[in-house]
Length: 332
Image 1 (tube, rainbow, N blue to C red):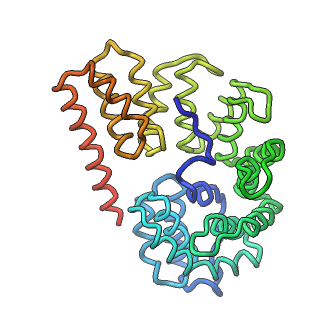
Image 2: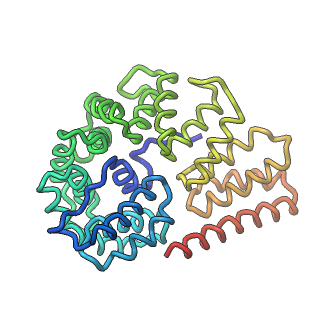
C-alpha cells in the first residue's frame, strides 16, 4: 500500500489555509465588509478548516465582488484544489490576482497568516509571478513569529530540495518545530520520515504516534497512513477493523490513493466474494481518477468475478461518481 507524505498530496492550498489557527482579519483599508459580513466570512472560513468546504462555498461566493482579500483567497484555494466546488485553475488564478495586492498590504503590516498565504501564492504562482526565493522569505517571516504552518512549509521545501538544496536534517528540525506547534502536515511528514528511516533512525512506533496526532486534527493523508499501519501491524498491533475504518475515512475525504488502498485492503480476504466485488468498485473509481495502477488489479479480479458481480461493482462505481458530480454541482 502507498504511504502519504503531505508534501505529495494534491491538495496544495488546503494545508496552508486550514493550518491558520487564527484568521488574518482584513483591515478597513483593504476590506469593505461590514462587521456582520466579516463575521459571515469568518464563519465560512471556520467551516473550511473543519473540512466542510462545500458548506463554506456559498458564503464566500457572496463576497467575491467586494473588496475583501480573504473571501477571494479562500475561494481561490477551493477552486485550485477542487474542494467543495468544481476545480477551475483559471478562475482561481483570477481571484488570487485580484486579492493579492491587499493581501500583500496585510503581510507588510505583519499579519502572520497573510504572510503565510502570500508565500503560498508566490510558491505556486497562482495569480502572481512564481518566485521561490520570495516565498521562502515570507515563510521565514511568518515562522519567526511562531506560525507552525510556515515552519512546516520551510521544512517541506528543505525536504523537496527544489527551492533550496535538499537537507533532511534541516527539514527534520523545521518539521519538529511545526509539529510541536500543532501543524498536522508536519506531524504527518514526521511520521513518514520515521516510518522510512529518512534522516532519522527508523522507528515505526514513533511514526504511528505522529500519524495518530495528525489524524486527530483531521488530516486525510494521516487517515490513509494509519490504515496502512494497522493493516501491516508495524508500529501498532495489527487490527483489520481499524485498518478498514481508516482506509474508508481516507476514501470518504477523496484522499489520493485512498480508493486504491481500500481496494487492496479488501483483497486481503480473497474468499469473500462481497469484498472482492467491492474492491472492484474501488479500483474502478481509482482508475476513473487517473490511477493507472488500478488497471492490473481490475484485470486480475475479472478472472475470478462473475459477470453479474462485475456489473454490480460497475453500477456502484457509476453511482459513486454520479453522487460526487451532484455534490459538486450543488456547491457551485
